[in-house]
Image (cartoon, rainbow, N blue to C red; front, side, top):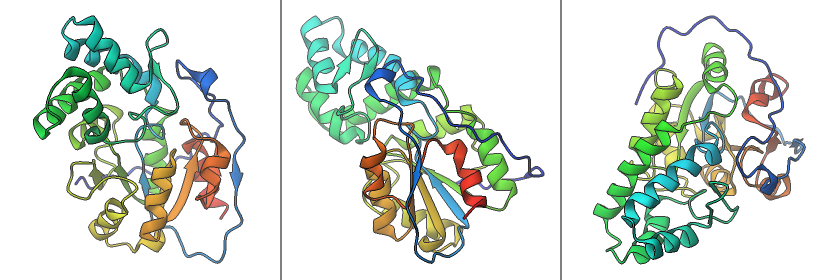
Length: 274
């Protein structure tokens, strides 16, 4: 756990609507932001961010990384590689994933089991750990941010918000990405699927964040681009904020969100206008 230190004076970042910039942008048409009317709610004192699709451009980061990892695991066996591509719902020519790809929101234990079948290998913790190591290195090399997460979080931290990040990715990868994005000194909590709190949509990662910072779930906003993020928030009793920087549409997220924003860049303005 990393506690933010030496927070700078507030400097409001630009609040702009992001445009799709993934290799498969045409698969994810842009949608306008929306905000559902809320009942009486208390103050938001802490924010828990999803990683991929919220802070990290999933397609631009994981697209080329997955290509490298699948080729490595296939070891030159063309048929095995094609089975990995099919199981991943991956578009090789575009180096991106289809919206129903298990890699978009599921932990390694889910898509790793499919990869194990494709390769004829045991679906065990050793294989999953190998995938996590390979993906950590590859995605960190190709890491592409959505907007400027450091500027956003610096602004929020300076305003007194307690910040965390949770993901269905491995913790080693989450920490590597946080360091590369310059977020490690701003985040007080980082959790992956293997951190001991379960995986989304389980509420336990949200509850663990609440315990770590000493803030009740009702005063926490969870920001994410998938229904799994929002379901985890709702199950924990936190506010659920959807962002349209991933594959989910506004109607998909609105079904279980308190608000839907075009991108995380809109969050600071939304919080100030509540």
